[in-house]
Image 1 (cartoon, protein in one colour):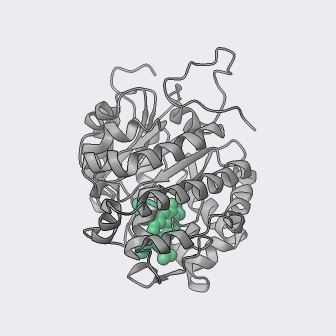
Image 2 (cartoon, rainbow, N blue to C red):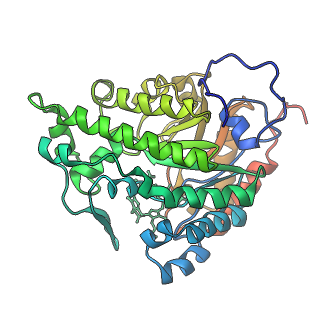
Length: 365
Ligand code: CP3
């Protein structure tokens, strides 16, 4: 395996091959690239006919648990779009099962956890010794990595401790995160700290399996961290995310750390040491990048609903993002959040073309 990756600001290795690695991997490390790499959050999903065809015969969980199917869905989406990276087809909630929490996806409702975690005793009963049960994800990654070799990047992923804890506690999606914050603020109980410790342990081993199977980059989804104030992020979520991110970097791969509605948290999120910070669409990319700091790469940040607009508007927005990035090394083009089901697939493909063909005025050919 590769040597430990030290995160942003680490000294460049002078012996390193200047041209090594996929365009996507190089951008994660803020190395120069021939053009901006692009991929899409939730690029394999219901907006795509090929995915809907597979879903006619299999549930979401069945696809995740059958490495042939998960690999096929991952590869088909990446090839149909012509993107620079493939994210493994899996779901954020898969680690809940080996920890002892059953869940299901209910049509139109999203995930439902049957016995949510609410007490210190519930936390105590969570298991951390069965991460190997998630081996099916590693086997799918192996297939995808073998298929693409070095042509495009292969991304593994997991949820961040805070976001996964919120699903475990709320039992599903939430508007106000009342139960999560109740447990989090619990002054007389160590349940919150203990829950995050268990999650960091499980997620570290889960990421290790993915890296050993061939994931070149790990994305950590802290999708709901924007529900926290900056002080609460610092007091209750930051340390666990930082520990997980540093542990993954020690495995030799860069980490993308992503959340939405995070404008007020970006500086703190960057101080976890993540190589790349995911930006949502609510602020201009250059402002977001300034808040993150230019020692980190950034990923983003087209509004996924702009994909429903006429092509001229899409093209204008894509151009604004690329001009805001200004040709600086370390920008990965993406959406600010996942593609939604009714999105026209041809508009997604058009964005790939636009990013490929974009030339910054005044830049060298
Ligand atoms: O290309 C890809 O990105 C696919 C792989 C992927 C899935 N889920 C498959 C999936 C990834 C990276 C995820 C991550 C995930 N899962 C997140 C983090 C990303 C984010 O959106 O912030 C979250 C919060 C989840 C939990 C989850 N899974 C929810 C809330 C839902 C229901 C919402 C919905 O769109 O119905 C899911 C279901 C899910 N996971 C789908 C897909 C493609 C929906 C399609 C289906 O049911 O087949």
